[in-house]
Length: 269
Length: 294
Figure (cartoon, rainbow over the protein chains, first blue to last red):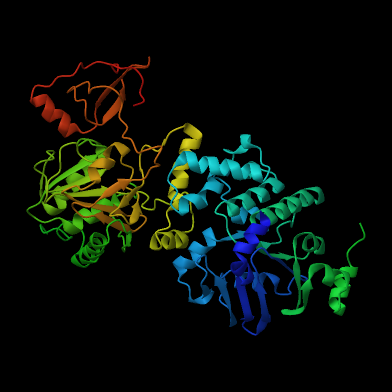
């Protein structure tokens, strides 16, 4: 079946989903990032790694249209197949894109969830925002997604503030994926979780990404996360991309001294 | 020294002009909350400062004013505001809905059908329907601008998830003219259908929050709901104990300390006119068909 899909949609799969061209952002005299160019293909997971202050988060905000770049541009292939410059989209279109075709997983789930509203409504909100108007169907869909992210259905009417950190993060993922986006941005998705919870979450994300053929851009400082999730990796330092390539290649055979340092600083398990 | 130290209807003409401009804008964009420079009024916030300013701005010497508080003409708030305008504008006042040209109301729409030429002025405590869901004013304004109202359904979803039905019984959100979602002030949802295609002009004034909004005559006002949980009116399942009305909104009145209670029309004018026509209720306690949920 996978083959059938590949053959019929070969052309769509062949064209990039998102293109960054010579992106740069200055905050006054400080350069947060510059000259970042890459192409992201459907179903591809790209990890952006680097130490804090290296420009990862700024880059993620530029790519997701939350910040206007000082230089360069980001284009995205809309569902109708047309490549559009993000800066040229109206605010309404950008916000619509954000809650349908894109997902954004925050490091702190409280940023991405409504903490006082039940889990079911958190997942259902995106559906209601695109015009779903049938309570039964919204609830069923929410329940399906809670099951997919391994949240006990008995907790569907509980607010996420009663959830553990790992559950909150899984709920946030469900909330983002319910509209079947094609691209998900993740900002340190496993930050602040303990190791066993991290492992479970990574496992879950890896499965979802491959099942749904999601493209994802994952910002992380944790090379283990990058190795597990991503196909490709970009190493940033001082706002510049200093090395990029296939994840295994970069992590097993880093060419830049800084990447070598990063890789060698992982504690042996 | 006999001339009063204030202008007709208390507010000075420049202030009235400013409020009228806000009202005109509100009428031009039905359901849109127009900011205005709300003034300090000789009454505390929460007592209808917004409604009073709107009334003062549009009141003319030939107007006949009616003021109601929860449907009643004779409660403190209604009497004080009526007296205030009797004193400052020397306008005629009435309790009869049909005779009034201007009706200021706190949380009820009269039972009698309003007619063209009448203006209904609502006192509004919290004009923003999205307020308790989204605390940022910048964000709610943007949501209104882009007509992003998914969040409003989240509130209704929560009701059904928790209580099995839409339990919001007042301040029930409506969509005006197929565009803006609006909080119809804390009127019981029983009154929501009366707003739809109403021949009278409806103006809403929030004094503390400094917002004016409006529903022009004959504008569509639709209560939000789900396909499988449609909007329903709510009324105690009993006839009025004084006039036997079966179609009016009822107040529950506790009559003793042993659980006795009676239900009477909240609209006193409606109830009295029915009694004059000879309708008599049981004048007794007890709803005739049991439970209070309709």
